[in-house]
Length: 113
Image (cartoon, rainbow, N blue to C red; front, top):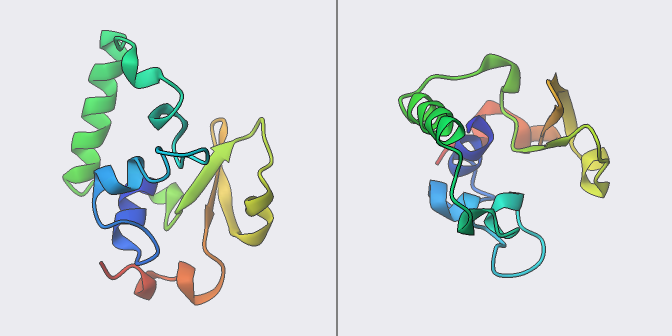
């Protein structure tokens, strides 16, 4: 959730949550796999849907998970995308690795939207 909101605030990405989440979903190269892997056509498991709603509500209310920081990118630890070597690594949380833009594009002043 925080990566999505970080992207909304960064000029390199769409300016809305839906714009960020569905960016690229009309072609190969989705930003978030669920947007193009058919997951949205399946009925969600209620307990996971409820958790996702709570996480989204907390994030939209301004709660920040500090370890994610200014991350605009992440991936599971099971893969190593080519783009990951070009970004500044923030850290691993659970099964996910988080990154921010390198240089001034990844600093707080860049998140101005």
